[in-house]
Amino acid sequence: MRLLHTMLRVNNLEESLKFYCNVLGMKLLRQKDYPGGKFTLAFVGYGSESDNTVLELTYNWDQEEPYTVGRNFGHLAYSVENIYQLCEELQNKGVTILRPPRDGKMAFIRSPDQISVEFLQEGDPLPPQEPWLSMPSQGEW
Figure 1 (cartoon, helix red, strand yellow):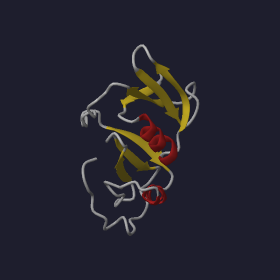
Figure 2 (figure 1 turned 180 degrees about the horizontal axis):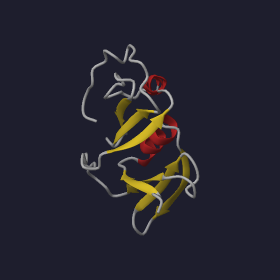
Figure 3 (figure 1 turned 135 degrees about the horizontal axis):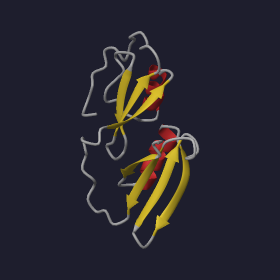
């Protein structure tokens, strides 16, 4: 067996595509409107669906209330080559680092739909360094 995709319900498809594509570097692989069901599916990922696990973003056209934050969902996790460099790049794009990588190993942010996104340093943790070492956590992740 192989994990094909994870589905996330999103409140604003345009904002979500900007986040996953422009901020996290994924590509829009395919998108299709389903007028009869009043929803749109957009699949994003780092490579083709035949070889990679991807995200299915589901946008329900008539959703009036924002989806509640589902802490039971957990989070998406990404391995990264340099957690400090990535967090600096994310901050430069206006992203708030909710759990800074004080330990050189782990950081958290949130998507526009409040989905927790974890970044884990590949291999051993990087040596602790400022400004991350003394940066406090904020909010929930």
